[in-house]
Length: 103
Image (cartoon, rainbow, N blue to C red; front, side, top):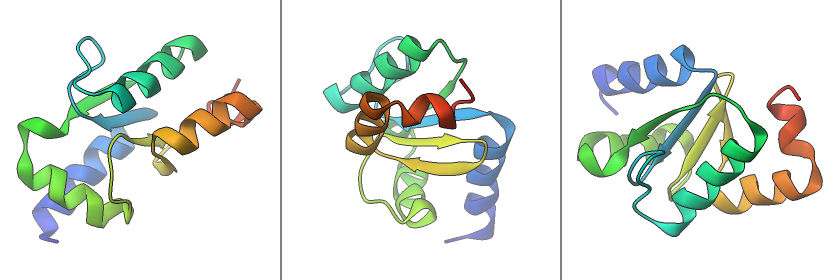
């Protein structure tokens, strides 16, 4: 991965406490999995930022390498990769996500 792209991703992940890389955005999710994670985050009442990976192919490809995760959405909290839709949903259902979000 190019250093410039890694820096762009680092900047987004580190400048937002909760960062979601997804298809679409929090107002108009472009897939069901992205929408599910958006709804979970809204349920928890946390502020979060989104990045539409459909708008930037370099970011879409680079994020897969950065996170070592092949699918979207990808959730980061406090600069750390949490997981995709299934993991976030399981963590939400078990109560673990609330702890990760500081609740």
